[in-house]
Image 1 (cartoon, helix red, strand yellow):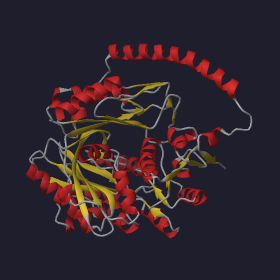
Image 2 (cartoon, rainbow, N blue to C red):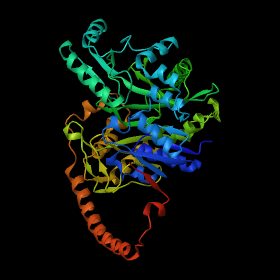
Image 3 (cartoon, rainbow, N blue to C red):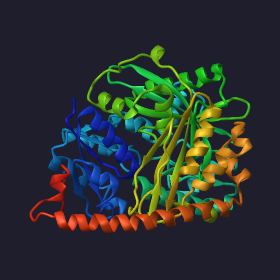
Image 4 (cartoon, rainbow, N blue to C red):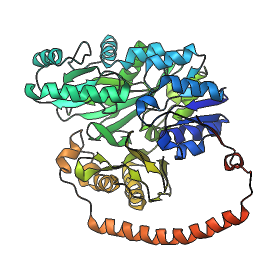
Length: 501
């Protein structure tokens, strides 16, 4: 079993991994950019190593710096979380060359599925239908224009080396193609260090359904059923649930079997997600493999009773899966809402700044994976996700009721968030009936504005809490001054220490 893991990520996912490591008795080392020096994940780790810069290319995407941090801390393995280096085959190979365990697929499997056009070829070889699209990725607008002419407009531009909506653009006319290619390529380069893109025929009004898979190094692969991820903004998910309301048991069996065929065809290992687009008539098409832990993994954990991070670590350590397909069952319904620091009233523009006040929800069936606290700085350099709120219930109606209640309890002030929009989505009759697709938000909430009465209530609650907090802070400051002992390192007393440049 691994004894120490370096977490090459930040925010809520870094904290999520730390918690499972603690349960497994594994020590954790973190890395942090200057802006994250006092972040929640940095303080929660057993050790923390400073990175040189806030820019992703010189911090969380700097492979040399991450490997150096692993050597400095004596870590045996690196967990990349999601985003950044999570699907980078060269980094996985660099870990192997350095004698480190990469907690994710091996480099060969990452190369097989990480390039989206290669993954499409694998899906075809596994007799899984794929959307008509590019044979090879490129950043040449002329080559993509010729392919668009052959496929027919509209088309979707997608990043060859990543997912999560980064580098994705819909193109409806030939005139807008060149600029869309430029923007998509730049975004992909910034997010994944690879600006190549490809295109696919645009499927009209689809649902986004994905299947969670686990595969060990002994050749056993299982699925953990599906997730519905159709509620999206800018091609990025904001509400996910499991199971999907679109699938009956026959269609569920077909999609899950297709996902396993793709995993086996690629020689996949560790946790991954096979993503599909589902047409209104029931036809489904392979879209891509996300060769990493997904943001929305908690809904699968909620209905299956498994810790996916624990499974990742055990598989990476060479352990076989401790169960077979027949032993995996579903229980109840789970919904996740992603809480972002962004303004839905202004096209979901990021809202950097300092979190002034945070009130977390609680109660039966509620899980709150949060990467910030009051006083945290939300930087401009990274994805603005703050937290994930997960609600479980015995059925979908129970899960929805819990989610609405928990969202109404949640307060994050100091930066704009999408909490009020999320509450309106899960409370809407159309969503409650399960009549959704990837265009849901644009159709039903095109000019959304928050309810002023709810915002006034939040502000009054914060002012009352802030007044009480100031009084308490004054008392705590006096106590610290009176009890301070020269020469005592507060990091040592907390059982944590830093390694800084």
